[in-house]
Length: 433
Ligand SMILES: Cc1cc2nc3c(=O)[nH]c(=O)nc-3n(C[C@H](O)[C@H](O)[C@H](O)COP(=O)(O)OP(=O)(O)OC[C@H]3O[C@@H](n4cnc5c(N)ncnc54)[C@H](O)[C@@H]3O)c2cc1C
Image (cartoon, rainbow, N blue to C red; front, side, top):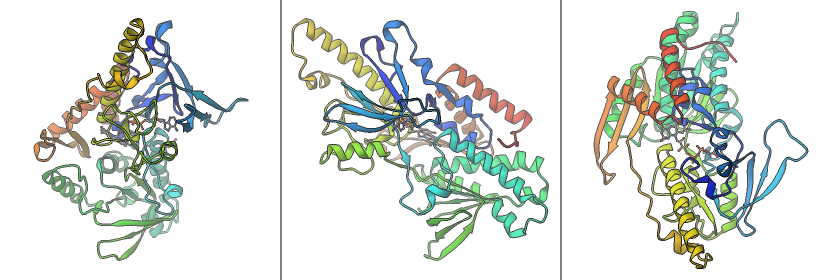
C-alpha cells in the first residue's frame, strides 16, 4: 500500500514493532539455512525516505489499542531498549489496520510455553538453533537410548502448506547435511512426525496432489504423517495426542513446531469489542467491499486481520494493499477537485462509492514438499473445480522462479538466489547460533 500511495498527498505514519518487511513464503527455508534470514527481510525505512514532500514517518512500536470514537491509537515500545518515553497516543484521520494474525493455539494447554511457532524471523532462528542443539545434546557420552530418541524426534503440528514445507525442508537438511556431518548413530535416528487433525494434509489442494504428497512423505523411512490425530496438551518434553480411535498417546519430542493457522491479535480483538455488534465474526475484522471496517468511521483493514471471501495469504494481502493505495490516491484527487469546486467534504462515502471494487487475481497455490519437489494448483474461475495441477522437479523450478520474482526488492532476489546456490554447492551450515 505504501509503495502505491502518492505519499506527497498525505501525512503517513507507519507503526510496527518490527522495522522490516518479511517475505514469509520463504520463511520455512530459514529454519534449516536453505535461505538466510536477512535475505528475506527488507527495511521499511528504505521506503519512507523519499523526496521531502513525500517523506513518511515510521515509529517502531506496537499498537496496544485503538479508540474508534476518539480516533486515537495507543502504542508502546516493546523492544529491549527503552527511553524515558515508551508509550504514546497517536491521533488519526484515516487508520489502516494491517497487523496480520496471531498463531492459533485453540486454547490447548502448554502450546505457547513449549512449542516453536513459525511466523517471525526470531521463531525460525529458534527452530534452527534447537534442531542443532538437540543433535549435539543427543551425542553426549552416556546419553540414554530413549533420551536420544526423544531429542532426535522433530514434530510438526499442522498439515497445511507451512507445516508441509517445513517437513520437506527438514527432510532435505537431514538427508543432505546432517548425514554428512554427524555420526550415523545420531543422523540415522532422526525422525520427523507431521501431525494433522483432519483426515488429510494440504486440504487446500486437489485430491491427486494430496495423495502424491502424502505418499511421498510416507515413503521416507524417517518421516511419519499422522492424520486424524488431535493434540490435547503439550508438555516440555512430550505432547499428548488422541488418534482416530480416541486412544491417547504420549509422544516424546526434541523440537515441536506449531503451524496450525491464524487467530486474531489482541489489538484486533480489542477493536472488535470496542465496535460491538457489527463485529460478530471471531476470525477478525469484518469489512465492506472497500475494506472499511464495519461499524467504525475512518478505519480500514486489509490482509490476515480482516475477514474477506479470500484466503489469508500474502498473495491476497499484497493485492489488497495495492488496491487500497490506489483507492486513497484516487480519493485524494477527487476530494481535492471537490474542495476547489467548494463542495462539502463531510460525506466521504460519496467519494468512496465512486471507486472501482477490488478484484482478486489468483495466480495459483504453490508449496515445496522437499527433495526438489513442489506442488502447484490453479483453480478454475468459479473456484470449485481444479483446472491445473502439477508436481515434481519442473514445479520445483516454477516454485523457485515464482517466489524469487515476488521478493520485495532486487537485493532480496539476489541474496535468495545466492543462498540457494550456496546451499547446493557447500551445503547448509550446521553451526549453532
Ligand atoms: C511460514 C509461512 C509461510 C507462508 N507462505 C505463504 C505463501 O507461500 N504464499 C502466500 O501467499 N502466503 C503465505 N503465507 C501467508 C502470508 O505470510 C500472510 O498471509 C501475509 O503475510 C499477510 O500479510 P499481512 O500484511 O496481513 O500480515 P503480516 O505479513 O503478518 O504483517 C503484519 C505486520 O503488522 C505488524 N504488527 C503486528 N502486531 C502489531 C501491532 N499490535 N501494532 C502494530 N503493528 C503490528 C507485524 O510486525 C507485521 O509487520 C505464509 C505464512 C507463513 C507464516
